[in-house]
Image (tube, rainbow, N blue to C red):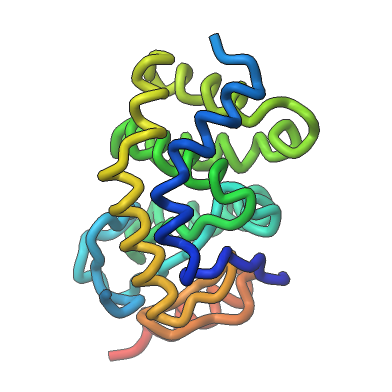
Amino acid sequence: MRAERPFKYASMSRRAAATGAALAAMMALAGCSGSGNGAAAEGDMSLGAAEGAKVTVVEYASVTCSHCAAWQEEVYPAFKAKYIDTNKIRYVFREFPTNPEAVAVAGFLVARCAGPDKYFPVIHEIMASQNEIFGGTPPRTVLLRIANGAGLSEEQFQTCVTDKDAIAAMEGRIKAAIDAGVDGTPNFFINGEKVADSSLAGLSEKIDAALAAS
């Protein structure tokens, strides 16, 4: 599975600062009414076993990455049933926006504003809605519908996607990811080791070996 490339961090500061304005412009056009890959990091969203688990699987992904959406649809259900639901591993999802970055950042912000219990369902729904987002439906329309479904009003949605502090925090997480060697999405690390094969068989080989190790 080919990884999708992020926008360069050299321009991230400017772009992050302008994300709110970019999204606002998009809405107008739509017609508005530092840590290791196996260690916990600030802002981590996780499922399965608690922090300190024997095996930690970290996925770096973007809601606008088609390969991430394919993994989510084709591999994640079985992966979740085998390892997350059984608490065999700690699964960590880390946000790494890819083009169009304004849409990706907005999607991640909406997921966080929806709250920890709804974060993953929102992420998965945005990925599952990529055909709409890239097929002619205004991205704001799709994101607002998903936000509404997660319990956010239109006013809360607008406040969420223009939150400068939240955007700055995301910028920090992206820089940490790049510093850790992430260069595209999806990217998987098992106990800090990058894994090339993200199929269920490829991940299972590494995970099962790590679980069996003394």
